[in-house]
Length: 382
Ligand code: CAA
Image (tube, rainbow, N blue to C red; front, side, top):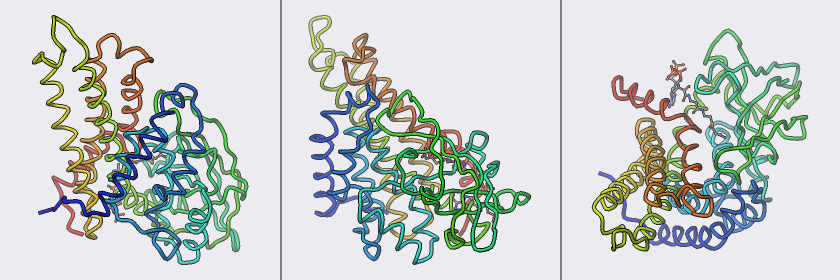
């Protein structure tokens, strides 16, 4: 059994994150969405309050919070604005492979950078022809003396334009499929080229760019873990970060539900607030159940990690259920607002656009089902 009674420390974290979301994110979220503003000042404040990088172990300058702690914070910040939170939270994804497999020296240097200054890092896995099919990647890394030379291009890279360093996956043995992929730390000043910034449907305050590595040379010791073991490192990373995406999706769904509840009490049709109509009540009842279930799955996946258990199955349950919930609840919130829901002046259309990415990044809704099916039909013992 999992006990989800929060400790006093976790309740304080939640309160602090909520206040930050309410006071620093909400007041600008819709304006930043409209203009696609880069939230530099908010990222800096989140860094100062340790609302980011809090996963970094104390020995590398962080506060070493657990996965459940992280999910509690992520739900609140995404309730404020999931676009800004995607930028604030991305260092967690970029550094997970380093924390899992990196040498002490590599961790000291690169985790240290993030705790000493409000810098950003990016996770570079996806390529134009290798999205769900990770092992189809074409980027290569070739060993030349005491250097690795990286060639290739990565797309949809969160914070790509602003990152100080990149966690990059590349083929080190072109003929070995997933067993020929390795992971590297690539500093921006090694010759990384920042290409196109995407103009997105939602999460418009977050930065998403194409990043190119033209013959980029990095020191041999910038390999993370063992050569040709990068695929597993990527999968283990995603097991650890998908609960965070699920927490964000729960935050979006909760925000949409709260707006829908408030509006349904104000909007009068047929002589009564529409909240008095059973059609609306049932929609809100479904929202409430699904938000609660999303949070419980998310917290279970995070707690398994905190307990040192393999969480692949529950991580995908949480990511797939919470992402689908965010999309459904935000769509129903627009429905409850009626025609006003379709107008940008009202808050819920942004949430509907933001929710869509939850079913796409860090593994699509279909990839989560594929993982769930495999884990359910052929459970792994390790
Ligand atoms: N933990 C540890 N090992 C794992 C694992 C896990 N969770 N999942 C798989 N493996 C191991 C397997 O045991 C197997 O090991 P062996 O080499 O010993 O046989 C190996 O990895 C290959 O596993 P599969 O046969 O299952 O691999 P596959 O090619 O069928 O792929 C997949 C599986 C689930 C489809 C995977 O490719 C996947 O998750 N794809 C989605 C990728 C994704 O989420 N991308 C998101 C990019 S990040 C992002 O979006 C953020 C951003 O900034 C926008």
